[in-house]
Length: 366
Image (tube, rainbow, N blue to C red; front, top):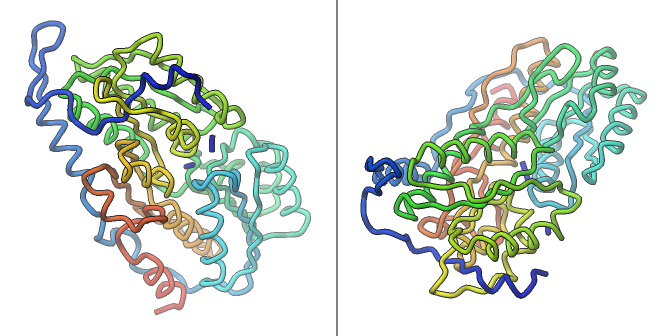
């Protein structure tokens, strides 16, 4: 689900990848021990490759001549541009007439595009990282017109007047994975600044799951819990981070709502060995992965966003032929300093299995 200077106070921030404690337990405020090894085991499991295909093995051959509109949140963010690029590729593979729309993070553009799809009698619409609530009325009209409406990376609940389906992904687990890693690496003493973007259902879901995991840690603290919107992320995120560090120099973990919201802030931060602060994000875009390689960030909880686009096309194909959708089992992987070497520089993480060949085989009717 997926651009954005800092004042002199930013020099207080250090991006260190070292753990703050080498032990396996930390003492909670009530004297109880926190099992740091438990968090380490869970985080290391989330860091493993996702190379086994868990999605559908069979399905209907491609419906001939389908006309599909793919509306992406906004090309300015790699987390939205990647799925849009994948939509063109998947459209070619399945043999459909596909129109890809840059939503520019503007609900008015989303709505106008849906209305256009209705007027021009499209067979299906796929929303990428767009809340159904933001386009409720045009979606209702689209469904009334008999158009299949798919959603990917939007965390929308299917209904008769909203989206026809939401491609499944482990949203809460992404947040849990991030928190587990930070708890492990801080020796159970994470003091966290959270940056949430609740305009995106997926972001709110995984940041909330991370927050809950930190709260359950017992020896961890939520020092700041801030919100931002995509339109002001470029200016607000650097200001928030530097302000929070100035006001609370004990913060040792900063988690951004999604990678693209951090990419303008991270390069401005000056590391110092005396003040280790770990930076984490979500999506697994190429810029964040490079920050991790360079030692400027610590982790990103990635989801195979292009894979999810292909899965959305597969479920649309099923519904257009009156067949039920299936769980696509889109994978997630925690990318950190320990395993970032597995990812080709300049690319997004996109799963570790050959999903394209599998979908092409299904759509060919083999």
